[in-house]
Structure formats: structure tokens, C-alpha cells
Amino acid sequence: MTERDDQALLMEADFPPYRAPWVFRNGHLSTIYAGLLRKPGPDPFLSSRRLTTPDGDFLDIDMAMQGSRQLVILLHGLEGNTRRPYMTAMASRLYEAGYDILALNFRGCSNEPNRLLRSYHTGETGDLRFLVQWVQTQFDHPQIALVGFSLGGNVLLKYLGEEGADISDRLSGGVAFSVPIDLASSSRQLDRGINRLYVAQFLRTLIPKALAKLERFDHQLDPEAIRQASSFAAFDQAFTAPVHGFLDAEDYWNRASALPWMDQITCPALLVNAWDDPFLSPACYPSGRALLSKHVQFETPGQGGHVAFPSLWSGRYYWSEQRAAHFLQRLFLKKG
Image (cartoon, rainbow, N blue to C red; front, side, top):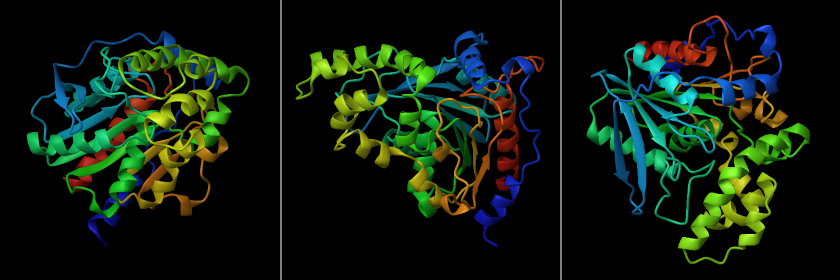
């Protein structure tokens, strides 16, 4: 049995499954409460740093370092940042567990426009790859793990699959919550009924940011098509796809999705998608193990919403923070 196979043994579930309080037994309520009403806790980050990327752009990172042998890199969701409550809560919980924390702001998500026309997107793994390599040259942590939410979770899983058997021995594994691993079907899911309200909320920031970029750079894009976009399909067709080298929105969704890469993952990874997540389509709950590596543990709580899993009586931490801390503890102990 190889070391990687041995590590897969730690993925036997032994953590209590999420049990939604009665008021949160609806995916929309959980999602809205966690996204809009969760109070931010204390800012756990002790320092910030700006990294220059190989293409001349920049990435802003926030850190909470305490001299640990283990480092956890956090990746936020679409139009999020390191100061969102789900990010600061996860950082605080893992810092309390004794780990060093580094949280990445994707390009254009740290309150300052990035320098290039291109931005971040759901399948962009180059910046994460650069960050992991930078971490390994700047710090001596023998154990590094990743935790991602929604878009950040897709980036995480796709990156692990792309690295495959060539993944660094220092990268122990990852945890991903509420991940649209099949982007095409998830985008269509969000175009239905009440889900369109979520899309409208995202487009309230995505469209102005895209239009501001068009004023700064030479381009052949249609500003009016971007301005009138009322769905992810329309926005991705008008902006995301052409700016990032995809043929169209369908090509972007197909090539950016993590699902085709998940059978290539060679380190322990935990994926948690709640069944009542309004953002996710049936394709985001693969039933066939052939679609997933044996190293991927896939958990599907009945409730939990999107980037939510709220609690009422367990202090300031939600179930997701406790679940990630438990998985990482076993992961680091196994490899340590």
C-alpha cells in the first residue's frame, strides 16, 4: 500500500453529519441567513501582502501566522473576499486549531481593480498554482492544505486534479464546500425561478467591474451586451469567455468545471455539497464512483444551503468550520 493509499483510509466518515435547526430546514433560508445576516467575527488576519504575478498583475493575500508546521490556504467564492464571514470564521477556527492561515483574494476582489483586462474565473487555477509555489519557496511548512468555498472550491478541486500524481509532497489535501463542479448545469439551475435573485445579486458587482475594465483597456467586446446581461450565460458569453480565451460560454463552462478532473486527484480531498443547495444541479452530486478519485470523500448532507450550514447553539462556529477542522486534524496527523 502506498502512502497516498494509506492516507485515503483517513477519509472514513466519523464526524457527526449536519443537522439543520428547524428554522434552517430550507436551503434558501440557510443560504440567505449565512450570506447576509451572519455577523462577522473578529478579524483573525495579522498581516497582509501583495504578490506580483508572472504576468505583471498582483494578488493580495492575508495571513495569520503563529509558527505552525501546518499551513492552510483559504479560497473564497464568487465576488467574495478574505473578509467575508465564512472566510474569517474558517480562518479563526483553523488558527485556534494551531495552524498558520493564508487567505487569497482572487484578482479584483480586494477592493482594488487588477492591472489587466483578464480577471479571475471559476476554472482559473494558474494563480493558485503560483501561490502554492510561492508558499513553498517562502516558508518551510512541511504540510499544506487547501480549503475552498463554491467558486474557490471548484478552483481547488480542479487544481488538485490537474496536478495529479505530480502534486507536491508538501500538499497534504483539501476541503471544499458547496461546489458547482458542473458549471453548465449549475448555471442553468440558477436561471430558474427564485434562483435568479442570486444571479442578480452577483451581477450587481460583476457588470460594473467588467464595464470599468472596458474603459481602461483596448478590446473588441460589446459593452451593451455586458450591461444588459441578466444571467450567467449572458455575462459569461459577453465577458468571461472572450476575455479568458474561451470560444463561448459553453466552452468556458465545460473547460472550467472541476468534475472532469476529479478522477485524477491523488491526495485526500473532502467535498461537501448539501442536497438543498439552490446553486447546484443534479450533476453536482455524482453518483458513480468512476467520476471521482478513490481519494475524494463526497458528503451530501440533506440540508445546509450554499456556503452555509448554520448553527444556532454551537457558539460562533458553524458546522462547516468544525467539519473542516476535524478533517484537517486527521489529515495532518496521518501524514505527520
